[in-house]
Image (cartoon, rainbow, N blue to C red; front, side, top):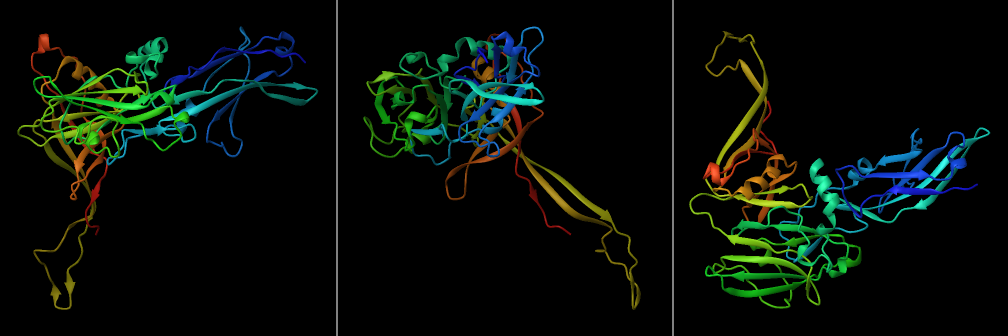
Length: 430
């Protein structure tokens, strides 16, 4: 029996997993398409996943009446196996894997196989794996409809390789960052040529713009680099200063009190640049305790921002109980006391909150921080009693909204947000 399955619309090589991931397939052999009960079979294979022992998730799709095509959006299956990857707070490497081909974290490897089935004389005949698609990747990104169209037109520039060179983008919309020496932080990158992700280059400058030193650190990840498609790169001052091992050039400490600014860029070992340049300005808080948030951005990476003005802590308290009106009868008669309870509290829960205020913002910073307002995953950086920086999970931003502002019209403006911590505390139960 003749069959000619043709993939008319395929997945992109790299796909934002929380957007539509559509494929279209067509049976070009008309007699086969006309078989009784003809249906397309599309099997989704995700590397490292078993789907209950089958190794794939199967979709059975009837042909569209007018075209005979089968159309399928596979993102709902893929997104279940992707999770965000926030770098460990005490990381001491230049590069860490966000995921590899066999570990579903911030990126997964997806293969689609196409077949069909039909009903003849009461028997269902299955012809599976007639066409096998090439390996694709899906990562933890979510774009607006307009952004998705822009991405489809220009997504290769999110892939770091020697072809894209200095045009290859980090997974962030903020290219000029304000940081303090004690800050930890990282940026994520994608690459379709992982063996070209070889070196991290950091150039530090003093307040006059003169170069202090050029630091080059090799990619020394222990995982097999040929399967990596997503890396987490150390970029904030404390994370750079925590890097251990030999350097190709330069030495620790990288960021000192003499550093006013620095740049970060990725190179391959010839060396050829495989990324754009990220810029960092050192700004220390003057009067108030700095509050630093790490938040999941639209591109599946974690951005970081410092709120340097006054912050205020508060606490919500909720309680449950019952009213007790008991008889105070004793052997000696009725006894009443000042301490006799009437309304009894049996359960108390508290939620910590904090109002944060930023320095004055630029237009670009305000536009970028729209992603903080809508982010589903936020962490507050803090220092524990032993002096180690860690993350504290934030449940949400309370009562926050975003408003477009411009320096030309609004002059000086900042951002004020209220965070509600994710972990609740409880008092004694009665």
